[in-house]
Image (cartoon, rainbow, N blue to C red):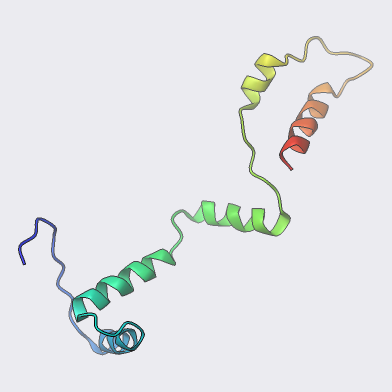
Length: 104
């Protein structure tokens, strides 16, 4: 069938033959070409898109943390800390803690 899409030739070695045999039992009625495509798509779905994104997702899942939203620079523009206060020397740390509490 004519197509503008690129075609890919795949050699059916013993490993692929075994994979096609297993796939045809799971997905009866599909041609070998359709099985190869389905196996490729399913396999690609198991690969991480970005290694660091996957690690971050695992950390978030384990800790229950929520990713930060917003921009600290924008927050500080709208809520300037002002001059240091000897009575409250850790004002910026407190502001950051408050922002984190909003997200958790």
